Length: 297
Image (cartoon, rainbow, N blue to C red; front, side):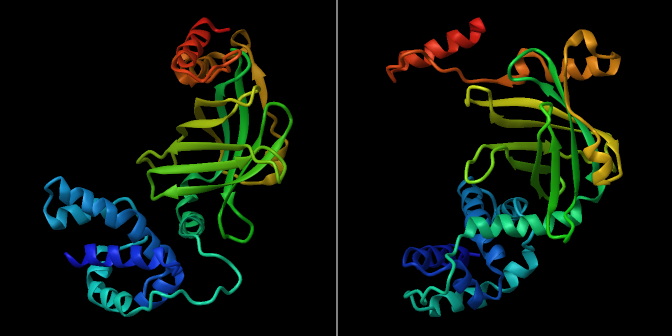
C-alpha cells in the first residue's frame, strides 16, 4: 500500500497543473466522485493513521469508514492500474469544455443522489422543537422529509413559526448523520440555515436529535439544540402545508411539550454571538462580548 502515497502525490501534482479531477478519473476506472473521496478523505486519513503507528490494514480500514462509496477490495484491486494510469498522464490540462471542475461539488452531488436510498426509515412529517432566538419561547415548527419528485435527492420542506415556507435538501453520512440545508433568503441573497441530526441505530425512530445553525434577528450566527419528533410516516404535501409553526411560552405548553422545552430551551442549549458597541478589534472586545452575553444584554 506504499503506492497510495505515490498516487496521492501524483494526483496533487496533476491538480496543481490544472488537470481536472474528472480527467484523472477517466483514466483510472473510478468515477470523479469516488476518486475525489479517495483523494480528499481516504488517503489523508490513511496517512494520518499510519503516522499514529497503526498497521497498514488497520489504518486503511479506519480511513474507509469516513466514506460510503469506496470498498477496500476494489481499491486494492485497482491500485496498480490507477498508479500506471495517472503516471502516464500528461500534466497539461485538456481544453475547457464549458464547466469548471469542482471536486467538492461532485462529492455533494454524489451524496445527494446516494442519500435517497437510505432515507426510507426517516421519511415523513416531523414537529421540531427549539428555543426562539428572540425570547424564551419554544418554537414548534413542522418539517417534511421525503424523496424528491424525480428521485434525485432528499427534499426537506420547513414551515417556520412566522408563516414562511423553505425548501431545502438533505445529505446522509451513511446511517449515522443527516445534514439538512436551506437558504432562508431569496436568491441571489444567501442566508444558510443548516441542521445536523444524529441518526440512531433504531428502526424507524420516533425522534431525532441535533444541532442547527442560522442567523439571529441581528444577523449574528447562532447554534441551538433541536428535536425532531415524528408526527406521521406520510409525505403528503397537502397535509404538510396545512401544518403551521408557532411560538409557545412555557405556561402554554402541555406536559410532553414541557419535557421538550427542558431538553431544548436551557441556557446550555444555545451558543450565541453579540455585537460589541464601538468595537476596536482587540482582545478586549472578546471579553466584552462574553460579558454582554453573560448579562443577557
